[in-house]
Image 1 (tube, rainbow, N blue to C red):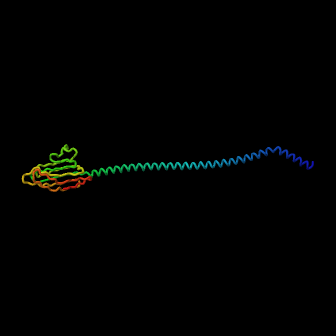
Image 2: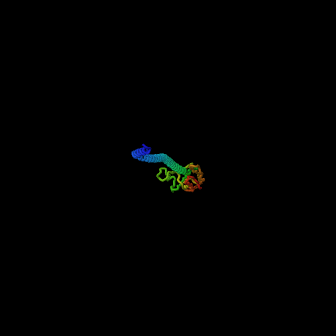
Image 3: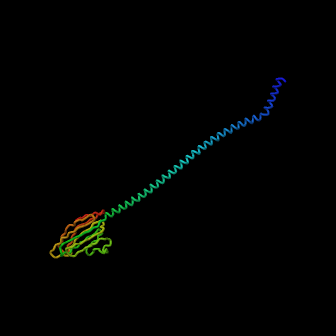
Length: 239
């Protein structure tokens, strides 16, 4: 057999083998392409998964930050509520203190008032008259000791003597602001006698001297002084 025949025979065998194996070569190439595509999809999936995981982690961080912010907000609300409660309590205490202060001022503005007189002549009967800001006149016949003569007043002519040496006493436990008129009257006296009357006024701050008055005739009456009590409880004497 010649070389050409051998070559031809070999070529024929090659062609037969190629024809037999050609489908497998196509399948192998397609598989390789499919494998490459699968790998590419796998890489894309991994990338997407990593991105999704990163987003999930970021979302988790955001949720944790949100939860922390909500806790801080609630803490601030609690602190504000406590501060408001303390402020309300302080306002209540302040209002109570102001009320107590005002009550103290009212109490400090109150004053008692006492008018006392005395004389030494044994035959004389001197009567004390005190007229308060309401126009109530206190004297022996309207002493208000029972509280029925002037029901709007606690004042009274508490001591009345009809012969000397003698004293008379008018008192008011809570003298309201205004003017009080003080007068003396010589109810009776032995003929030819003169009567010197001295007196004092007492209030919560102390004592005030009334001007001495001399009466000579039975029935003689003298205006002695005007006593003023102001809104703060201060007492002023005007002879």
